[in-house]
Picture 1 (cartoon, each protein chain N blue to C red):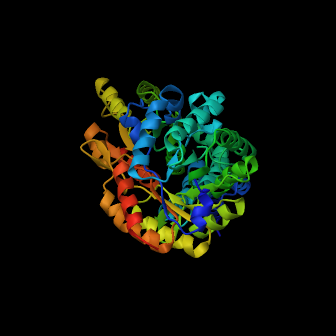
Picture 2 (tube, chains in turn yellow, orange; picture 1 turned 120 degrees about the horizontal axis):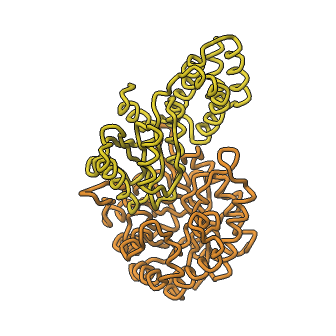
Picture 3 (cartoon, rainbow over the protein chains, first blue to last red; picture 1 turned 90 degrees about the vertical axis):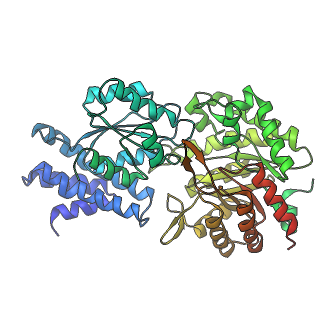
Length: 212
Length: 296
């Protein structure tokens, strides 16, 4: 079995020690870091995301795979920076102001990282101003917002408004999600997209940055 | 009142209450405020909602303590008020329930993922549940209701915490399942059969499911529980799944629809039938009428 396939499998199985070792081995063998990332780590996480989507595996499997992927990323990151390899985009994510639920949002973050995005996770109860400011400072292409409560959903509209007020609507796209959120709600507040689950969120963010 | 478990053992079917959170938001709970804070600031609102459900015919009223474990309250910086919050919430419902309905101390998930998936240890979660259970039981609940659990290990910690505090207090334990092509599983991968076995092993007296599904999936889930366990069962269904209509979140399963399908729960042998998200006093009134009309 090719080593990169083995690496992808180690991600799928959630084995951080093996992922770290195989990544180092590939680096030493002179494989370009970008290839190790794409054909090893991201390839593995893509399989994990697909299996989770069809309920073949569950949240614990995804979380363990993510931990394994991070073990490989820790090895690769300095080299990717050195080589000036850009990520496919930066996404700022957070649960909106007043909302303290973040398990769903965390899952979206894992899936986005697994797809090769740089993810800046602002945590939960994030004020609209902070989301917009961070996106601006970090040159993020997308802000991803999560809400689990119907009562906190309006804060999503505030972020969209704030971007509009600062003439950032075209530069920084918005995607919303969470149990009570719908495509109709996204349209209503003028968000650019709606993700119905973590896997779908990755697809729509890829669409937003033109990478699919 | 006769002890809860005696009535269930005798084959009675009891009616639970309906959604709490939406009722509280309608009564002015500010967005972002934890619903549990009302126990301290506006207990009269909790009494009012409990009275609506009692008058609709609920035999069991849940306390506003779903997020009342210190790990959850810590998100709002009020974990030091754990005892006061839980006590006041129980007292509010007790003033309404006295003699006419059981007071069930609600206990939801910690909101954290247990190691190795997350960053919180079993000991920390266990201690958090212990503190809440101690407060609920000291305040005089008739039973506790561990609910909306998706991680069996966490649900077991909550059940064991209650039994360690008071072996004689009945423990209801319910989990939330998603329909998948291979059957019903929690997002953490627990099947109905595994939940039934695991909750019983931890010492739960009544088991079942709440939230996450409308009544039709709940009927199928109840069947799986019945096949897997001889314990009394409880089902608290949502009024469907949330939809947005003209900017408002709505649950569109009507009281008549819920009660009509819930008839099948009685046939399966479910002992307690109530509502979760989106259900109202009208849903509970319809369930009451259905249960009263069915003789097993």
